[in-house]
Amino acid sequence: MNPVLLLIPTTSYRAEAFLEAARAEDVPVVVGSDRAPVLAQLTGGGLHVDLSDAEIAAEQIAAFHAGQPLAAIVGVDEGTAAVAARASQALGLPHNPPGAAAAASHKARFREALWAAGVPQPTYRVISPEETGAEAARRINHYPAVLKPVGLAGSRGVLKVEDSGDFAPALERVRAIAADTDPATGLNPSREVVAEAYLPGGEVALEGLLLNGTLHVLALFDKPEPMEGPTFEETIFTTPSRLPDETQAAVRRRTEEAVAALGLAEGPIHAELRLTPDEGPVPLEVAPRSIGGLCGRVLRFGTGLSLEALILRHALGRVPDPPAREAAPVGVMMLPVPEAGVFARMDGLDEARALDGVDEISVTVAPGTPVRPLPDGDRYLGFIFAHAPDPERVTDTLQRAAHMLKPVITAG
Image (cartoon, rainbow, N blue to C red; front, side):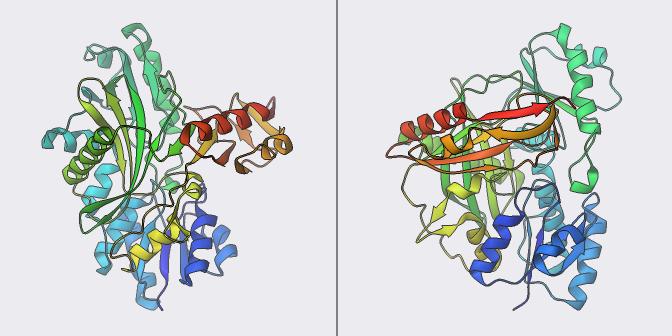
C-alpha cells in the first residue's frame, strides 16, 4: 500500500494523534515537515517541505512522489492545508480546490468570499501593511472592533479594541505579533490586518467532514465560558450541544453556506460561529482542518474510531458515510498561559486527576519553556479531558479540575 503524506509543522500538537491513528489503521505514512528530521525519528522516514511557499512545497512533494507514490496528502494544521491542496491537485489525488483552501486560511480572503456570496458576517475593513494606525483608524466606524492578522491561526494576534483612541497602538501590537511568526510553519507573517465589528453572543464550534461537497457534521461543541475579549483564548468545549434543535440546524446551514462560498469540497472542516441576536449564527472562521491542539481526543465514532483515524480513512476513500459520534457527554478544557515567563511545573496534578469524571490531564509544555499569554503567545499549557452524565456536569468537572491546577511560571 502506498503511504499517506502527513504535513505536520514541528510546532504542531497533532503529530502523535495522527501517527497513533495510522498505526491503528495499519496505514503507512511519511511525515512532511519544515524540519523533517525531528519527526522522522517517530516514523522512520521524513520529507523536508518548504511550508512557507505552497508552490515550492508542491514541487518537493511531486519529486518525492515520483520515487515513492503517495496514496493521499493530509495537511493537519492551519499552515499546511493550502499546501496539501496544491500538491494533491498536482498529483491527481483527492483534494480541496487550492484557491478555496488558501482563502479559508487568509482572513481577508475569507471575508471577501463570504461577502460575495451574501453570507451574513460582521462589518469589516482590510488594513494594508502600508497604512499607519492613524490612517486606518479614520476608516473604522464600528466599535468595539476586533483586529485579526490575516495569516495566523486560532486566537493568536486577535485583539478587541474598545474605541478609536486605542486603535493605533493595538494595530501595531497585532502587526508585531504577526511579524514574530515563523513562515516555515506555513503560517503567514503578513502585516495585513482585518478589523471586524465585534459581535455579541455566545460561540460554538462545528466539527465536520466534507465528502464531495456534502457536509457531514461530526460534532457540535458549545463554549460555555463567555469570549468577550480583549483577548480570545479558548477554554472549554463540550459536546453534545445544549442548544435548541432549531439553533443547531441554523449553525449547520450557515456553515454549509460558508463552505459553499469558499468552494471547499473534501476533508475535515472546523468552523467557529457567533450566535448573534440579529443574524443568528455568523461564521468567524471555516478552516479546512480538524479541531486544533489535542481537543480531538474527546471524539470517538462508531465503535471507538478516533477523529484522526476517520480523517485518514476519508483521505484513502474508505468513508462512504461517517459513523456517528459516541453519545456520551464529553468535554475538553485548554489551559491558557496566565503570565509571561518560563514554565517550571504544574502543581496540583494528582488532585485534579483524581477528580471524578476527569479522564486525562495532559501538560504539553516542557519545563524550561518560555511562554507568553495570548494574543502574543502561540500555545496552551495543556488540556483537561472529562466526561459526565450531562454537558453541564462536564463543564463543572473541567472548571473544578482547572481550579486545582497551579502552573508555576518563573521570571524569564
